[in-house]
Amino acid sequence: MQICYDKAFPEAARALALDGAQLVVSMSAWPASRTGAAAVLADDRWTHRFDLLDRARALDNQLFWVASNQAGTFGSLRYVGSAKVVDPGGAVLAHTGTGPGTAVATIDLDGGLAAARGGMYHLRDRRPDAYGAALAAVPAPLPEPVWERAGAGRA
Image (cartoon, rainbow, N blue to C red; front, top):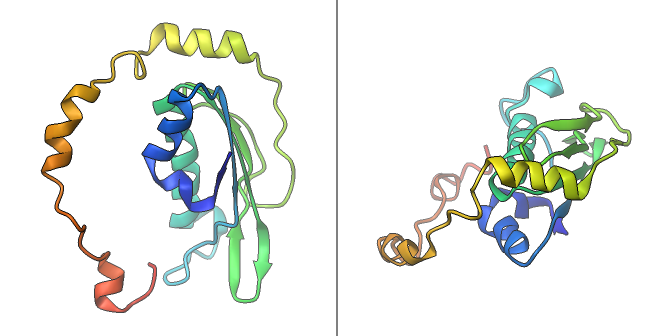
């Protein structure tokens, strides 16, 4: 399982996959944009990011992904909803859209994983031996995010 912002970090899902996870459940309270929000929630950039991250994490780790998220409003926040079931190839099998609801799909866990992993080799072809040089080039500590330097809040 993961919570909310964990989905934004590929390493979190990868660690679960390498530990043998075949299905990840990601529970969130992911809001829409606070500034420059789209009038239609489905068109909001944070709705798009939420959906893209779910599909990417399933695909790049070749596992099933089940996402839940708060829907509706709380105070001044609007939540993107967007509960879904994603297969190991990144295809959305069931989706609630931006409203409340339950995304339900029947999956073949073993067959779906075998099909994905038999045609895509993301996990098999990893090159952890090459990561050392790439990680050595990353400055430590990482610079502050742009919104923190500008004092503008999350965009």
